[in-house]
Image (tube, rainbow, N blue to C red):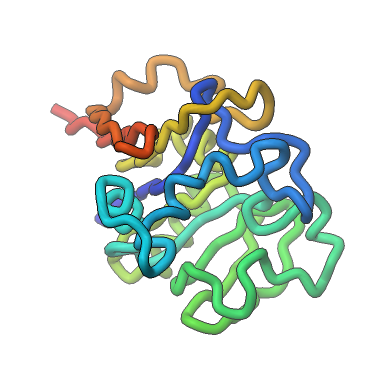
Length: 211
């Protein structure tokens, strides 16, 4: 069966994956771009970037992915549901190149974009959304793309097989945290930590085999 994976999810030292308040002008609130500077410097992000540890982890983002699930707050700023012309942050050719399922309490018709991305809008629980994404993924893996609330919900439901978090050495103090309500999550995963010269730490969570 296909796996569910999370890649390149950046968090602060105090566990926040985004700052606040989020808006069209500040998608990550007061965090700005500080959580993602490590990735912006890599060849994965831009030709001519670095080719070290950070690039190696970042490049795994798309390998073997057949569908993505994301939350409403990743697709757009607060209130995007009231804008019938909103088609996401990424322009006419989004970087997903697969069926992409946006979880929202206000579904709308699907949007077919260039490059193979089609946005579908679902009002569904994590298990329901995962079943729909698996049908569309044609045997490939499903990426849980964020934001933090969606990642937390899928973790709490026991639906994540592989998770790559990047701990960035900044303290945000407020925003949306990954860890709330996930006590003893480490009991279900083998965890590896790799430090990079950029100062970030790559944390890989692999679900333990059931004996």
